[in-house]
Amino acid sequence: MGPAMATALKIPGYAHIQKTEGVRGGKACIEGTRIAVLDVVYATEQGHTPEQIQTLFSSRELTLGEVYVALGYYNDHRQEIDAERAAELAFAAGHEQRKAKYLKRITSR
Image 1 (cartoon, rainbow, N blue to C red):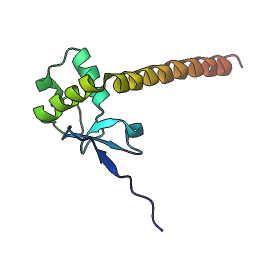
Image 2: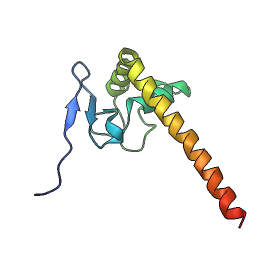
Image 3: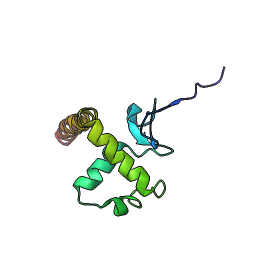
C-alpha cells in the first residue's frame, strides 16, 4: 500500500477555503495554497490592503475574491481563527524559552 493522500475538506459557503489534514495543521487555507486565513488576517492587521495581499505571498498571486473570502471566513469564524493565533503565540513563546535555555547551557560550558 502506498502513502495515504490527504483529502481537502471544502468549507460550505466559502468557495475558496479548504482544510486539508497535514497542511498547515489542518487550518483553513485558501484553496490550492498553504496560505492560511490567519495569514491574510495578519497581513490586514499590518496595514496591507486586499489589493496588496494579492501579491504578498510567494506561492502564487491571489485573486481579490480569495482574499475577501478569507476575510469573510475570519469574520464568521473569529473564535476558531483567534484560537489558532493564540496557539501560534504560545508555541512561539515556548520556543523562545527553550532557545534561551539552550543558549545558556552551551555558553556556560
